[in-house]
Amino acid sequence: MSIQQPVIPDISEQEYRKLISKALVRSVDMSTEMSSESLEIITMGIDKHQATKNYEASAQLIKATLDKKFGASWHCVIGEGFGFEITYQSKNMIYVYYGNIG
Image (cartoon, rainbow, N blue to C red):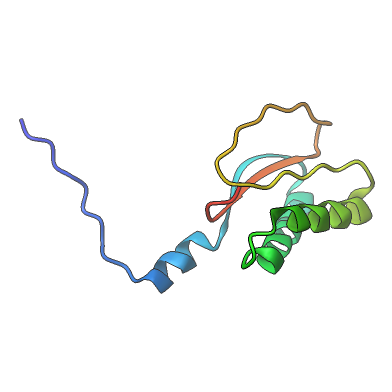
């Protein structure tokens, strides 16, 4: 019995970037409205500093915006290739991948 390899279509770099430019919500514990607003804030913050890969500035911008919009004590961690374990306040967590950034 032979195993068939999956067929991977040839796509251009522009098409590939379009596919990965959408945020992928890995885990969420908040209302639908709050998660969609948070997702907009996160993508805006990452897009603003993605060219320079300044993740610290992105995290600061996202945290400040979330604090202003939903109240204080938000934490934001951004990077490539990391793992973590957290405790969080119920109904106040979202874990997102945006391209290769978590």
